[in-house]
Length: 193
Image (tube, rainbow, N blue to C red; front, side, top):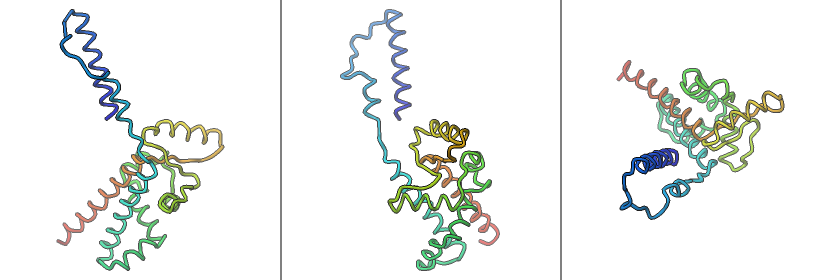
């Protein structure tokens, strides 16, 4: 919103200059505040950690739906027990998230060098309030470009192999995982309604 509004403000400033250059009077129109001030008012400092926790909760929901579907069960105890099984978690993440079949992962595989185990540990560190994980750190989506530069610098100097993940990254990977699941379910339904 901020970016689009700033673009609009810049365009209005351009048009204002053109009106002035061509001697067109627009003096009857006045603003109560400078238009640029609204951009600052739209600065939202979203809690990145909270965004990540919500996204991991979404991923957990997909995982539990998949457990129920694959096992043809609605037994809550079975679903919860399976959801805590690290091997089941890794299998799910490798099947739907960290796979070439996931379009986002396929496009970002080189920089998103995270294993299923690391991703699960990262999720646990955020959700269970440790907020410390080796080799993975969160970054606000707005700083994604700078995070990529820092990753390259650290890797280049062989100091540290660190991956930064933003809420946008996680959102995209989850969205593509959901699409994979729905396609599979749709295929199953087509074969056996």
